[in-house]
Length: 112
Length: 112
Image (cartoon, rainbow over all chains, first blue to last red; front, side):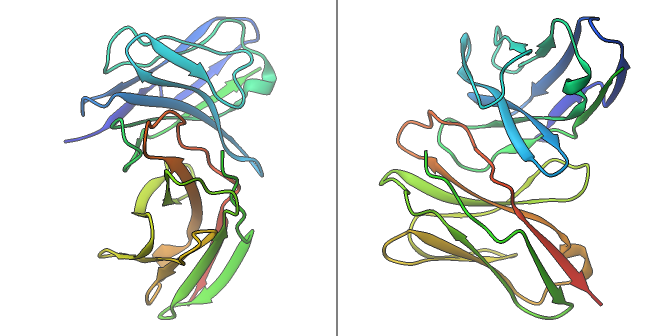
């Protein structure tokens, strides 16, 4: 089954404690991206990657890092989380051309 | 990057046809128009994509006028389960360089 898998689904952490949210896709897609969604603000893009070792900033990259060492994985790293990063996060993948994108189930992160 | 404008919310009743219009005045030659649906706490789900004229699939139709500065998503005979947020996106098909950029979306509420 074609899918994008994020882990964990829920996470509560403390300010400053480094964390990683994993994202994996099984469709051999070149393109992967991360979004955060906050009430009233819709989906905002954090980072995206067009292929292995190719990443670029989206609209709200501050406080986040990503890496794309393998085609299937695109982890989101918060080196020093802060409460304003409390949000619902989605990972997405799609082929090179902008056809249908597939989204993960979401990760609800709370930073206290 | 083409910016999109949609109504913030719409109301309808079961069985009615719903048309959601999106404005994208700065759409570029290589841009496709794509619509996504999102239920609360779930990742967006692809509905339909088109470049010009009309596209129809099993769930919706997409109407794009000749100047491509707007598009209309048509949902025939909506049901309660169509209550969701609908996003209109435009994106480059030539290179796929820019990832999906979501606007604020249209919140559709279907009443019995």
